[in-house]
Length: 389
Ligand code: SF4
Image (cartoon, rainbow, N blue to C red; front, top):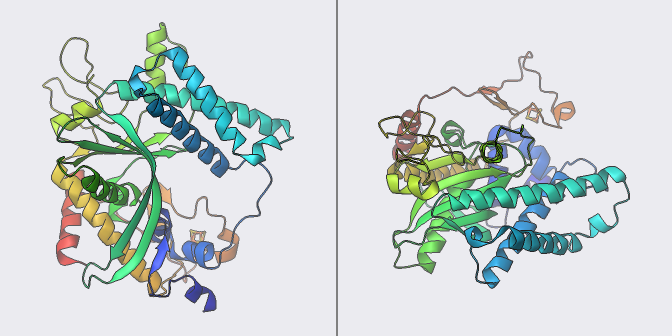
C-alpha cells in the first residue's frame, strides 16, 4: 500500500500528464505497474524514440525562434534562407544532446543522419501547410498546467501538466486557434476514443490554451478552430509524372489529422485551396477536409460545429476528473480496453507480469462498443455532462 500512497499528493490529488490518464483508461493495471510500481524496461545507451522526439521538438522550436528574432514569417522565407536556418537549428540542437557526440555505433550514426533528413522534410511540409491557409505558427512548446476538479463537488482532484507542441493563430480580431501535436506515428482524433477517455490530450490542451490566450489577448474573440496531429516522418513517395505532382503526393502522406471546426471561415483559414473556384481543389492535401460538387463538406471531413467542439473540450475535462477520482480510489483492476482495432494489450510490455488471458474466467476485457456518427457521440457527451454520470 506504501507505493500507492506515494503516488498521490499530500492533498490527496494526483499529478501527471494527460497521457497518463489516457493510459489509465486503456488499462488501470498497466497504469499501476507503470506509474505506481514504476516498472520500466532497462535503458540502453542508444537513441530512443524519446531522444528523437526531443530532437524534432527542440530543432523546430529553434528554427521558429530564429525566424521570429529576424522578423520573418514561416511562409515568407526563401528556400536558401530556410536551408541555412535549418542547418543552424540542427547544429544547435545536437550540441545540446550529449548522447549524440558519444555515439560510436554506425547504425546509430545512420539514425542521426535520417533524423536530419526528417527534420528538413518536416520544415518543408509545415511551410507548405502554413502557406495554404491563414495560420501562422506562433507559440511553441507551451507549458500546460490544469487543475482538474470533480464535476459534482468542485473538489480539486488532479493537476495535469504537459506541453503543447505548437499553437497557430490567425491575424484577425476573431482570432482562430489551432493546436498541433507532433507524433512519431500516425494519430487521428477519434471522437469515440475521446468519449471513452482514450484520447483526451488535445481537447484538454485546447481548453487550457484558450484560457491562457484570453488573458494575453483580452480584446480578441478567440475560438477553437482545429486540434491536429502531425506525424514527424519522412515517408517514401513514388516519383510522379511531374515534380509538382510528386510534391503534392508527399504533402498528402504528411496530412495532419484531427478535428476541425466546420465553420466556413475556419475551414478556409486551415486550407484556402479547397473550393469550387478555378485553381482550387475539392480535397485538401493537408487536413481531413473535402467538399462535394455543391460546395458542402463531404463525408471524409472530420469537422463539427463550434458548439460541439466546446462540448468535446468540456467533456474531456470532466472525464479527466472521473479518471483522477478512480485513481484516488485505488481502482487498478486488470481490465484492458478493446475498441475496434484498438487493443490495450497488443504492444504492452507487461504481458508476462499480469498474465492476462481472455479465455480465463477471472480476466475480463472491457469491450467498448462503437457509438455511431459524430453527432451521436456529441449527444452522448452532452448527456453525460448533464447527468454527470
Ligand atoms: S497486457 Fe493487457 S491486461 Fe496486462 S497490463 Fe498490459 S494492457 Fe493491462
